[in-house]
Image (spheres, rainbow, N blue to C red):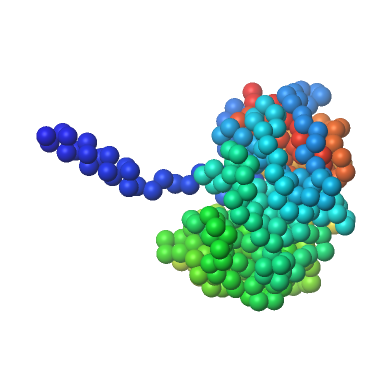
Length: 402
């Protein structure tokens, strides 16, 4: 009887213990651009890694794919409509769901990446459509338009936000004068809170969620400000204004050990902020205007920050402790991710390089992406030894496992 009671208690305990949500999202875990992938190639063949599959027909766009345990999801624009597409990991399309309209004015196509949480996919189009879609069937659960519902104000290149999740809330930035930042019930789309913030248009930034013992803090950019809000209430806790007028802040900040780093395209450049232990205050530690980047992303590898410069087209390294620029590499400009201490740099001319970071940046291997359409803007993704690169209407999968 004693053993039976123990078994019953254990069953009740585990059935009542909440399971941590499985989140697949923009730039990997915690949106850092760092992919924890063991046993990757440390050097590529002369012609580049093996192309294991390709798919032509994902629509126009610059949004990266997001991969779960058994599926891949990607957004694309086809005939002005916004689609979410699901694939198996061998490149076979499983379904395609239209969820709104997409940008057709300049740099035509999708901008954002899906966010997948426990079988539900959250997507945002560049024309303000937000939707929740079942990952198995492609059935749309709910949807709304930020311009219509919240009197949002779009950006000059279209909304570019990959949605963030905290518990039962999903966050979006309509950019309205009153409803500037909004939290929605992720199961119904019902509005849970709104904040007018600074009343500015959004800034192409996909937000970051920071977890503290007493609260979670949502961090994002608007046109001229970086700011943090209490995630459950929408209360603004702090802000960090930019020195110059510029609405193109496309990079998600990086958080590590009580410090927040961001790389902006114009204005403050690269900045390190210290955040208080409860997330309620910030203090500037340093800034370096020599490294500016508008949308290619930055990564922190050990004690260095890496990204490509926007005005001076080369990859740069900044010491995360001192804020001094310590290295540079001529490879144009573009997107940056990292794995196993190595950088994966995808420049705007379509070249992909594997770059070592210590003691100095040096190209180990490189190849050119020859397939696809329009600009080379999408950020690469690594999952289970596969390097995924989206070039417009084409999605490419390269084998980089050793």
